[in-house]
Length: 163
Length: 93
Image (cartoon, rainbow over all chains, first blue to last red; front, side, top):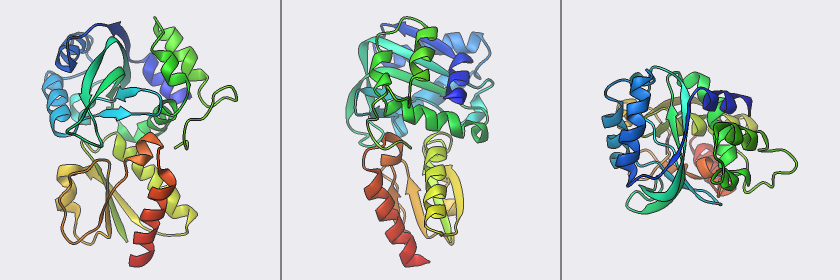
């Protein structure tokens, strides 16, 4: 899980209450803009993308989302891990007209997609792992990383076919 | 043989699906060129393609079969999807 951990370390951790996904995107965008992660078009691209091609995923344990946009609006690689105290509605990637109550969102800041294959595969492994539901309880980035280190180890029960 | 793998932005889910398809081809000794792109770039790449694999439904393509490869993202139903894709590829190769 080395590559995924390194991307999460380069990103951000946020836990809080958001009215809806737009509220969440606006707040995180302020942060990302200030710190030079994204271009000024990022927020608009992210919002549009959720309308045309939503990113909500129902895993076997809980609902997550992976908001992202084209690489040209990203300046720094990373993953934002966001935990919602109260679930936020996202539309489903597989059934776009349906919504799901998302507990954890992973915003993918992908500047170089060639370099991201392993970390994306590892993220999908996390989605199929029992560790995913434990992330809801954590309070810090360090705890998230600790849990991810446990993915795929013998204590972690597989929830599906690993990708 | 040419296979198009597409997702909303051509960045995240198509990367995962493309790697999964490469593995599937290798394990079944099939050869194909894989083109990874966003959903709105599919039309421009369609010429000569045997199969379009998309991460989400709703793609309107004529004359080329389309498979939605969502199970490669969630891991639910992977075996059935492998089988479905192989059937199409074996028929065209």
